[in-house]
Image 1 (cartoon, one colour):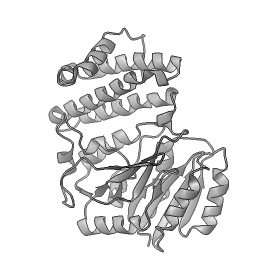
Image 2 (cartoon, rainbow, N blue to C red):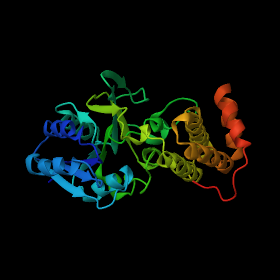
Image 3 (cartoon, rainbow, N blue to C red):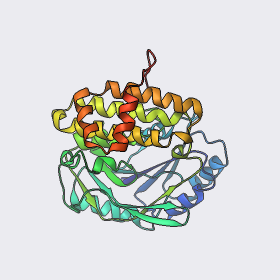
Length: 325
């Protein structure tokens, strides 16, 4: 029986994939499988993965004939996974030796639906430890209780799918799949759904994932229209949270986070292509008008002057007829 399925999407990462695969080899176990999803790479990545399929114990290689993006590639891996537990890694990141056996031991000891971990952020040669924004460690809790407060960073603001491990019952309940086609912010509706609908979780102080920041091919570094998928992602967060039984308590957090992300992108608008920058402003204005206006008013009143002013100015911007994400 497969105990752990590791889902690893790859797209045009020939420079980094060898490090990723070496780290998987240092985490291999006879009851682990590594699902390597090639999302229609056009560089040397397919050849690297073909070799890995032969040389890495437990490797299963799947190739997309069309590029679908990270969310779709992860879903392909989830559908193919046979493990009692699942986890994720991105094709340009890497692991400390023995991380997955320790991670598996943690969730088996706790017996919860999912576990969240810290990680090491790697920017060039710099290394920074990033902690799950949740103070209690090694204690099984109700995930809904980790969403609030609205004005502080909480577990839903730490959406990294690879920073954790997930029991198969979440797949069976329809909670682990991502929204197909989202090119960025795909993990935001995902982490919100987990925290609203799963029954138990814990945060543990395990460092093992090394997250590579500043990769030139990453969508976080590219200023094209795919970046604007964050609007579709957060529209989904707000819409689903509005239907929740605790909507009156949770919506202020969802709306405030959405506003903060819009403001963040507006503050760095010069990195976008000119047409995309214009579209960002148009779609951002339309998004503000779609939000519950009383909740939006409260969110803006609670934000710092710079962000609130930027968003109020955007809110007054006329939106073209039919503007939508």
